Image 1 (tube, helix red, strand yellow):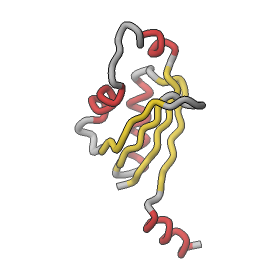
Image 2 (cartoon, helix red, strand yellow; image 1 turned 180 degrees about the vertical axis):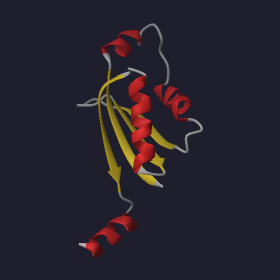
Image 3 (tube, rainbow, N blue to C red; image 1 turned 30 degrees about the vertical axis):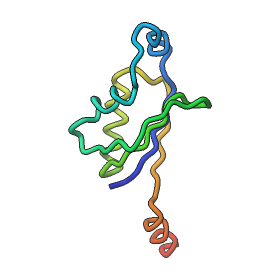
Image 4 (tube, rainbow, N blue to C red; image 1 turned 135 degrees about the horizontal axis):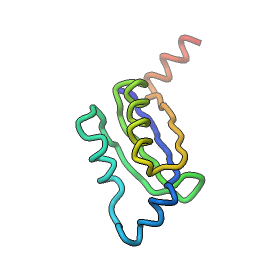
Length: 98
């Protein structure tokens, strides 16, 4: 399993609905990813360049790309960034290959 950080900026449409439809966004994310081999580690609201930060274990880069595309079709994010994290044992392996 690979660990990924997904950061997103909420769309104007989603932000405008917050007062009318207040909810825990991690529940919506769990529903979107449920049954797709994902393990949601955590979901946070952020106050910086991005509004939402998600950390999840996903089996492959291809599966993460599929998740990003699935989330994109919802129209809830106007911009996103994905970062593949290496566990320290993976980093050590990478260092020996350098």
